Image (tube, rainbow, N blue to C red; front, side):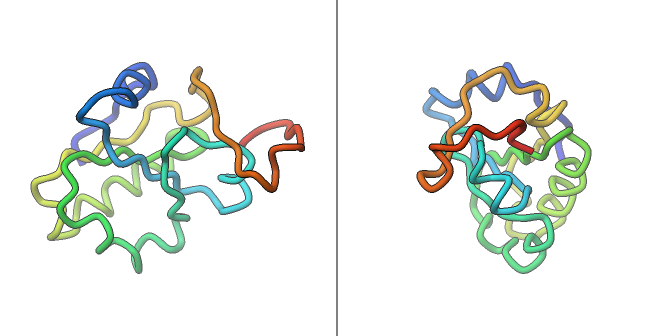
Length: 117
């Protein structure tokens, strides 16, 4: 793991050529209620079995509600042999600190959740 990245840095990278893979480790239901546009949902409990999906990635940012579990997820991804050359970071403060837009899945877009976490 290469440390933490600020929400502002993540927001700036969303529109860049060097866009990272953003891995949201929350449950599918939480993800559906609101997530960073273009992020991928890989629930934390599925991460060990799906870690091979990150082989060859250049930059990975892990995301969770408060920025704590995503640190552990980033460490786990960083321990995988296929990600040796990747820059792997956890988003500091998690979605609680995110000021940007959230994308909602179609089946929940009519609902107004109290919190996306």
